[in-house]
Length: 95
Image 1 (cartoon, one colour):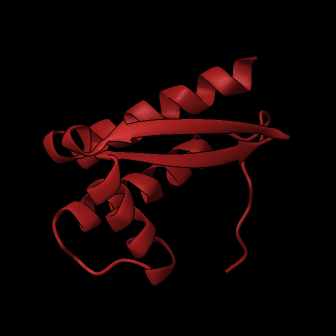
Image 2 (cartoon, rainbow, N blue to C red):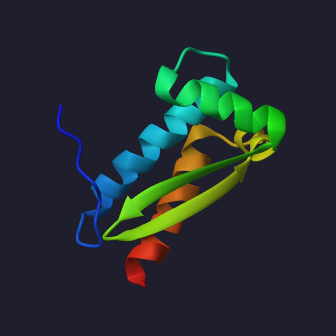
């Protein structure tokens, strides 16, 4: 499967799909489920050392940096996390 980077011209459905994948992975990690090893150790380390997960989403040569506290991940639904990420991506897209 080929991965596409979203751009300011991407349909909102593509942006939502990307945000959904991120939210799914974060909630799966929170529930203690196995996630991609490329991310699991970094997420675990961020939780222990900082209590905040910092990750980046690249769009059109711009990079959106998201700082998400683990307590927010724990208390928010997957849908709410995805909506929050979509909103941040749409704001970057409109700049």
